[in-house]
Length: 519
Image 1 (cartoon, rainbow, N blue to C red):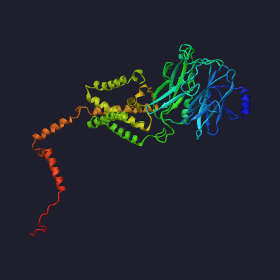
Image 2 (spheres, helix red, strand yellow):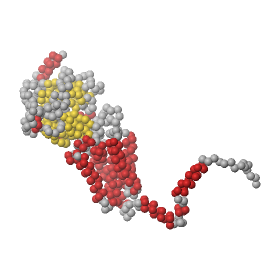
Image 3 (cartoon, one colour):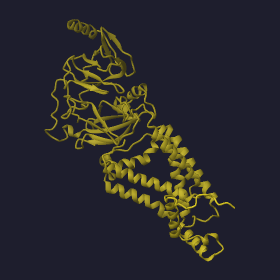
Image 4 (cartoon, rainbow, N blue to C red):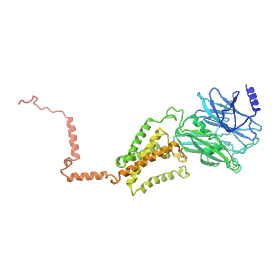
């Protein structure tokens, strides 16, 4: 069977072929999946039917290839041979392998399979590079593959961290690869730079089709640079690890482009994606709509917030309760989470220092009241309008994802998680966010305007409760015609009430004569 496969490959290699950049379904011959350079191909992998991919007619100016395959959450395995070796195979949702070509080689093969019992929908692509292009993962010392172009992704409720292996300089087919750590000069891999890119999928779209379609924008260097946002540029002296704020149920694709500024060449790593949640978890997975208790709480919170937004200053005690509840909720949430085992689910470098961040945050929080110190009623109404209307944003977020909720969530994450200071806090701002932002602004302006017009000509604030009590007490003392003047003191009333309660438990005494008297 092996001899027959080699014969088929030889026949296919002798036929003329073409390569292009458009999406293709590809050709299949004798169980072989024939790929073309730069063309995406959709595949359905099944557990009992492994596939073998082949590339024919490789150009002589190509020195290495990167084959990559992507799926949404089911693992796939890619390898150079039928025998799975740790340094020549990889398993995951976003995996790729680098194939260093030998002199005169014009054909290579890969093996694709899955151990998942359900069929796996995937998209795959083969990219070629020349000897002047840097080799992604060419100086790998941390992961299993000899040359590892993959991005390794980890996430929790607070942050998502990507890691990748350093790259190496390119070389000709018949030359040995440059040594990685013998020197740090201009002629070594230390001149390479790494651009980290982030790409957001459409909000509230967790479909497999959307992911596989958008992954095609993050595989090749020109497409990555045109569609994604460059977050940071790392040098060879920096640690090849970057952290981001976790965005639950929001699809994000990450990729790294390694550049050689001396030769003005570049190459892309294998992109990786995450939703900061699991599709396979039994409870709280990506497809769940959230806890009912959370929705009920934020719905009631939003109703109270709307009342505060439009009537908060008139109902002064209710406003104090609402604002106090928010501040004390924040305080105790942070305190309980930091001091107990309970766990819950600005990119400026200067703010990565906790002291700088919290001092700046406190100054901004204090600055607004100081500015409005001369007109406290306006400050109260503004607080009611903005905070009350923002509660509606939080309620919407419990039903439908919106990036506006991270205005407060990122502050909470910073207070709860020590390492969150190093995370980049980029969030998508898409159609849903524009609509919710408009609703938030409309509610805030309407509430503020209504309260200002209603309170015109009224006292700035309700009288102080202590002054009201003192005034009422003086009135009772001086006005003997007031019925409340004749009310006994509190101590006497308490003693009288206790005496009445004691009488309920006393037995009735015999009176002697039990027959009724006759008139």
